[in-house]
Image (tube, rainbow, N blue to C red):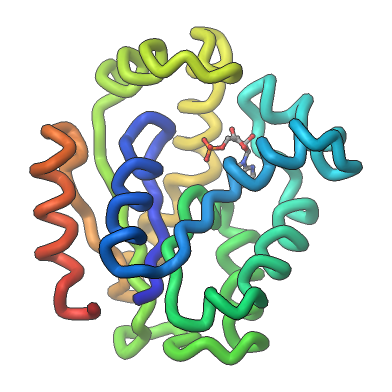
Length: 193
Ligand code: AMP
């Protein structure tokens, strides 16, 4: 199982990705979590990333690429993975295609035979803002939220078309109870497990 979770901030991708990863016993890889850990640990990378994260901007692609490359080379990632929050730009998606060929993961070619699925959780903006404001993370103030949604629409939403054209897209309505969304995801993805 090789899954990419897309969807705007607040769509529930972290929650759903975590649940499914536990269920299928594969790693849940969240680039946001990795970056936040780097910020807390005050690593060189964390220090570079912090200002972007606090402003609701994307961290530059080059910084993400090293993180993801390192994580995908860990032994536990050979059995499959759920990526949460990566790729977030078309450049990251292109990099990721190349990386998968290098690490020799099955299903690395594009096309409909590919085992990778890209899940999009669709949720209207007004629901997202309400959910994010109640979450209370450091980058969840109203100004940053608005910027993150704008960045998502501009830079990440084009990936929906990217994966749809390759027949890898699984689109799910995320504006429902968590359990309902989980059940639908399981059903939509069960052919791959
Ligand atoms: P998330 O936890 O996925 O909402 O990510 C929190 C923040 O980390 C984002 O607002 C970005 O600043 C940064 N971030 C996480 N993943 C990426 C990525 N793939 N590309 C660029 N920035 C990212």
